[in-house]
Image (cartoon, rainbow, N blue to C red):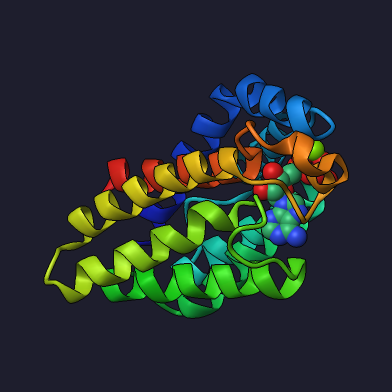
Length: 204
Ligand SMILES: Nc1ncnc2c1ncn2[C@@H]1O[C@H](COP(=O)(O)OP(=O)(O)O)[C@@H](O)[C@H]1O
Ligand SMILES: [Mg+2]
């Protein structure tokens, strides 16, 4: 149901807004101290603009992506915006989310981020949470898990991804200007991406 997806996005927004200072502080260490501010502004927009009565899940996600694109700014705005817009295509005309649909949506989101940002896993970005999460989700499904347990596996992998970002230097985005001095700090985008997955897991 599009309404449920709207409510889930609202919860994601609330979580991001609640963690605005935390995300901004992480970005202060290796960036320009705006990730939480950027994301909170974007999701405030999503909460205001995405309507409860949007006709289908694709429409809800598309509006979310467009709002993030136009309001978040920074590197993460276009990246998260693209992620939701690409996921929207998977859900065009749909009114339910199966476990397989979720994988297809996550896959499309990651491809969109990679196309736009030209980053791979291991460059200390949101992809270090999202790619392992996608892989863990996919293998859990293959092993017969339901959506809830697959999302549990995804969240575990995303949190491990955050830990991994502490051990590597950034080679993409603003943090890459610091080179090896970025080692020891967790990536803000990997953190907001993991929060997103955790809200989705808790919502289902
Ligand atoms: N090329 C990229 N691909 C994927 N994610 C990226 C890329 N560049 C930056 N990021 C993500 O964006 C986050 C920073 O977002 P933000 O602070 O909002 O933007 P900016 O770096 O422009 O200030 C990083 O922590 C990282 O996860
Ligand atoms: Mg920043």
